[in-house]
Length: 181
Image (cartoon, rainbow, N blue to C red):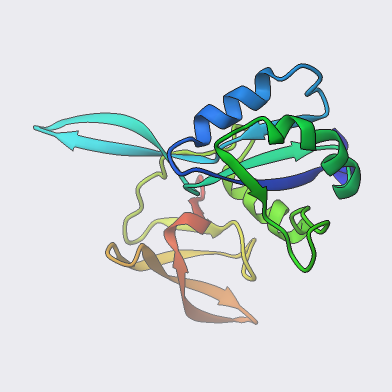
């Protein structure tokens, strides 16, 4: 789908039924103009020294639907399909019931975090002295070196040259990546 014709809609569903509802929607005949997904994150579980991976739903109670149809056309098209889902309640909306398409800036930000697979993968580890690049937010594109890490708050204090001077900036670990070099 071309980027300018992509819309995301958020369907409020019974918590615990997200995957089931998304799978049922995928199997609906004629659903070629929409693609339901449940954003998930990959987590690590450690027990007795062994690590295993599992996926956890990022937004319990919600199914996201990507479509090429604008809101009113999407509502007309999907209403009979969604109505059949007993565990689906309604679409989230902004000011009125027809304003259900997620705002572009929200969609783009979430899309950047989730990636192509609509899943947040395990973050790589960071340590003091690592060279990193800020990948989202107001400081995106700036590079610096980790001065200190606060594991409890999931933040790093980074020394970065901003406005021609070296300053310390606190950023979330989820918005930085290591710089090869």
